[in-house]
Length: 356
View 1 (cartoon, helix red, strand yellow):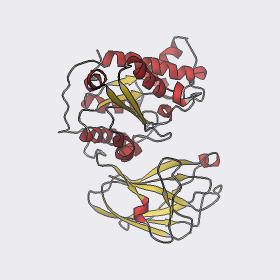
View 2 (cartoon, one colour; view 1 turned 90 degrees about the vertical axis):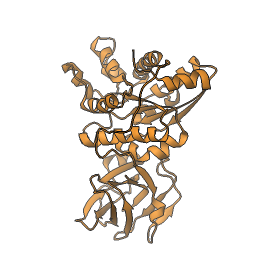
View 3 (cartoon, rainbow, N blue to C red; view 1 turned 90 degrees about the horizontal axis):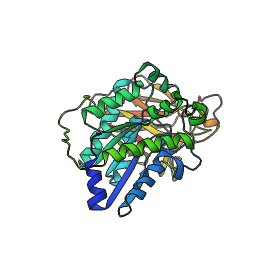
View 4 (cartoon, rainbow, N blue to C red; view 1 turned 135 degrees about the horizontal axis):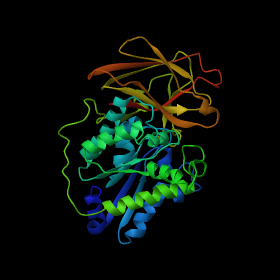
């Protein structure tokens, strides 16, 4: 039997109130579904809870953001996830963590777990594994994709239940019940049929796991020495200085406002305490490039524009330095005159600074 979700069992059967949170990327948002609010695995899972437990008040927190990994998740965990006081958290970042540094993945996933349990030690957590067509090739050699193995290392250490939805999809293709083109039309995001397979497997898993039981939890030791368990978003408005401006426009609906500047040569300085630093910013057709440095070290260039900005504007992020020594630091930013050839401007728009 799977590890019991005993606190979820208690909430559903005794407290009669359960808040479910979904933390992940576009597959958890429901990209590719005809109606993400109805036909994504997330929506169908919430619907299953409501249909199965008619006397329980079920609340859903949708905290997934497309194109983002567990690293941004560790920084926005407090703001986007824990503020809703979830009782059960599904975490799905295996696809978007693909090809990232192994140690960074472990630090990020462990940081999320520790933040959740430092906030509410009774919250149940489930790791959810989805796949791309490319990632699924590893199953042909009887092994899991690298990112799933790394996530599972954290799951095993903290005795967190996990469910491999992606492997079930691979099995459907392997047994001839369907094709990749039918289930993953763009090789990443499921169709309604693909999401139904995901949801059915999740319901099977939950039926086995929601049960009374007991499990020992401890945060005394950790897997990594630099878990992002103090990750946070620092509002960019706190850094305000001219000629930068406070813009009340949202960061693509992911953050309430931004600090913006399109003046080449304009600088920004931020003094902080932490072990890592990054930016949560807007990627748009007129986004520009900047130069940045920490503690007076050699400046480096970073662009807030990419090729996808030609088609749509979205929230993005960059980890500038993940390996700072613990202590006080100074970040300096300068808007550059030089920009990407296809960019329409020099604008740097920052919603928040990522600090651990």
